[in-house]
Amino acid sequence: MKLLSRRRGPAKTDSRVIHQVAAWCLGYPGDQLFERLDLMRAALAEQQADDATAALGRFLDHAASTDRAELGQHYTDVFDLSRKRTLYLSYWSAGDTRQRGAVLGEFKQLYRDSGFLVNLHGELPDHLPIVLEFTALADPERGTAVLSDNRAALELIRFALADVESPYTDVLAAVCATLPGQSPPDRASAMAMAAPERPVETVGLESYDPRLLPLFTTDSEKAFR
Image 1 (cartoon, rainbow, N blue to C red):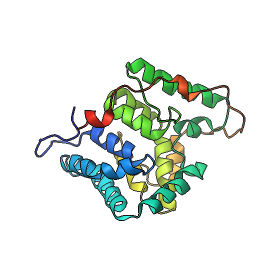
Image 2 (image 1 turned 180 degrees about the vertical axis):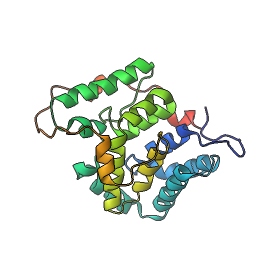
Image 3 (image 1 turned 45 degrees about the horizontal axis):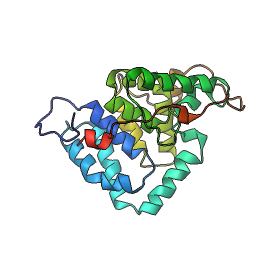
Image 4 (image 1 turned 90 degrees about the vertical axis):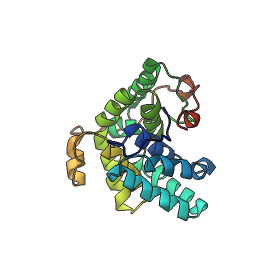
């Protein structure tokens, strides 16, 4: 599968392309992001024009026109300094409780069952960019099911980003647009999609070492060229 195809007038947008572009956009905006801007733009141009491609296009335009240090600081501010916008999906379902270790284990098992070796890039297995790349490259069906299971979290992150007028709102909106059904119109509706009560107990996690997850052996960027 190639990220850049020669198709003209696709019948519909390939969600794998949206998920891979979103995965790259949601990583820390280092040199790789800027080196891939033209690749991502060309890939989106090969897709049907829709809400997802338009949203990602807006983010790429913003990234290209923004000072790199400024974008990096914004990324740190919105994702690393507030739990309200965390990209770790297990936090939204389990909070800082002992149960979170079990949820992380489920993500790890998902990757193992796929037969792929997943590169965590030093992150936990529930980090949204990793889940998106897995969905794009390894198992679109099961990956999309996981994203759908975490739809409430994705929508709540989107609303939280919109609250601070972050350009990353567009990236979350693009991901949500690939999932079945309409996005909820407001935060209350998004919260209603989740479990009635999310644990908030703050405790030390049971022993969990992300290095236990084997590394990806496939170069995802080459796979999508």
